[in-house]
Every structure is written in structure tokens, then in C-alpha cells.
Image (cartoon, rainbow, N blue to C red; front, top):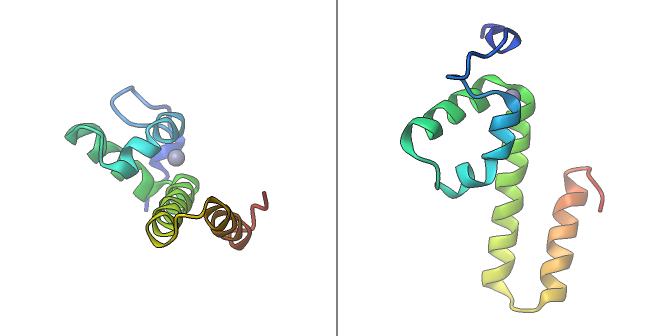
Length: 91
Ligand SMILES: [Zn+2]
């Protein structure tokens, strides 16, 4: 664990802004190899981005699960809202 992400980025490295902008593509596995690797490395070292990615991953999983289990939009909405509440975000 080094405080490397505190120094200015050179452009080769992914910073928090770039990481968050590419987060959904990253979770969908839509990024190309090198960017995916850099993003993975950043998320691994950066606590805020890790927590953000972890939340989004669970959020997407909850949406996915609700979508396959039940077709009722109301039930889906409830499921997503309860997930958000469980994460302490409220909605
Ligand atoms: Zn970050």
C-alpha cells in the first residue's frame, strides 16, 4: 500500500474522474484490455473508487436479479430502493 495516487497523474494512469466515467463499462466488461487493467489497478488502490465500484456492482446485480425473478416493475423498483437503503444512500 503506497500513497501513489496522491501524486499528479501523467495521463498513462487512470485517475478517479476517469475511473468513475468508465465505471459502468468496466463493470459490463466493455473496456478494452489495457484500460480495463489500469482501471482495475486504480480501483484496487483507491478506497473511494473501490467502494463506488463495489456499490455499483451490487446495484447492477440487484437490478439483474430482480429483472430475472419478476417482471413486475413495481417489485423491481422496491427491490432497487431497498438495496439503496441498505447501502445507506436513501432514495
Ligand atoms: Zn480513485
